[in-house]
Length: 291
Image 1: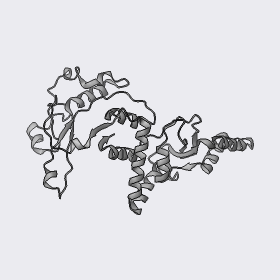
Image 2: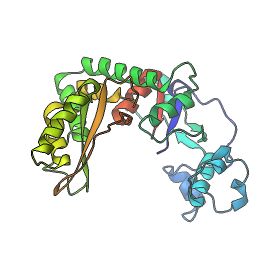
Image 3: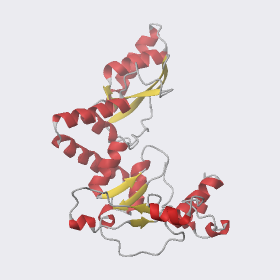
Image 4: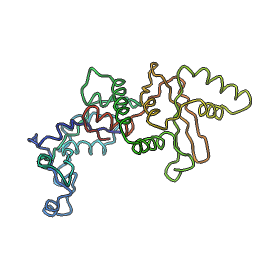
């Protein structure tokens, strides 16, 4: 997963000029430009450029591990060309808004981040160069922003947010199998309750129930489902640290029934930043984040 992060206050200012891109920008929505160049030109990479144009530079993409050569070349070309940002078109735009011009951003490799549930926050911290704020603090501020916004919306908007959260973390397992092969249900177990939960599971196992079936039964009965804004906030605060209040329990299902139970016994699982977290993080720090 890649993330593109830019300062939204900068993007909103008129374009004052920047170093020219290595490749000319061609607007695929501009009929005049398309007509003038014909229909055989690759809008991503003009065909008259040699392969050697991307071997030098690339702003670090050549050093990124785990990329196939084709992926690496696409990223180098995208870095050379840039990413075009256009101000949104509004029918009732004011004169100041109409003066906004397009901006071309460079897509650069900012460094490696761990591929765990904290990747959104560690990547954002690195991209924003905020040395005085760690990933856990970014989580906390993201959740705090969500709770402020969630508390200010109308009843209908709150219901829509809750529905989206239920769809992601507490799906109705009667549906969705035409799209998903596996669906997950997220539950929150208090760290201080883990011993009593284990004891209850062991009791059912001693009565002859299979371990996974016993665990599913106890966790669904005694743990908190992530199914609304308040429980989402508890979930998104989990960073896989011993200081977390809750552990994440994940139940995986196929259409036939229970597939597995991830009991996260060491408490290291972190909540991955979802679309809601991305929006709240961007709002809190006045950035634009594209994933």
